[in-house]
Length: 309
Ligand SMILES: [Zn+2]
Image 1: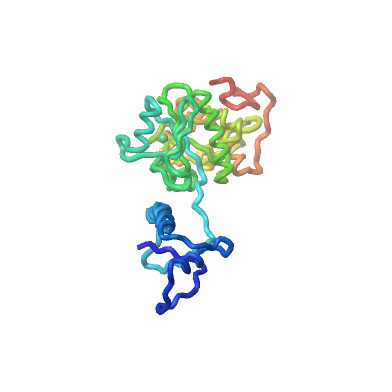
Image 2 (image 1 turned 90 degrees about the vertical axis):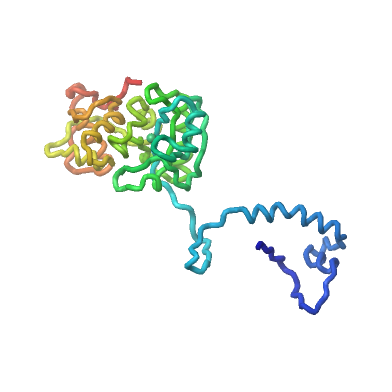
């Protein structure tokens, strides 16, 4: 049963008899006191009824029935710390919107956002809630990815280049999310990065370099150089965030992300990229000296996918 407390009503003894005029005076500011006819009070009650019903239907915050509820105002919502990018691998926004509100072959799925190839942004789950988009996996020390991340699906069939209006909208959305939710801009990864071998999106065609130039995600910076003796590329992959349960799958995801290519064995350019990335995250004193331009077989002072797209 819902009751509404009337503020500032004078104490009313059970033996006292109030009429409508007294009660109306008590409910209104002095300057506005006047006699309300019964029809006016009835109309007011009818007008307020939908508000009362709305209040009755509003979800209450979860409370543990084992405890006495003594609310404190000193709290806020839990905050995601990571943004995960996907491709839908479906044929249209309409099909993706249907799947993300029902299920796919593996069960119920969703995402916080879906961006169409025309750049239109759809939101399906509130930022502070847990969308079912990342699934099992690991990134660095994070293991419950759905609790820790915002999921953004991109309408793409998995084989075609990403449309520029879609990337432009993604950059606007990343600016909003990283600012409003205080997510570090480097904490933008692909689904396949957190689930090597299980997932392959957003794939080698995704323009990670363009995102990095706008300030989002990890990307090699400055001149690439050969790592010093004793450099462990597997340790560097783990420092970047990749799980090494399946090293071949981890290299495949790394290649999609940082080389824009297929392949599951590390080469010399991979080692330069991994050393550069690891130095950004955990700088070591034993740094390499950048060689003279042209002395390496890969591009120097250029990101590895420069010129592609
Ligand atoms: Zn995905």
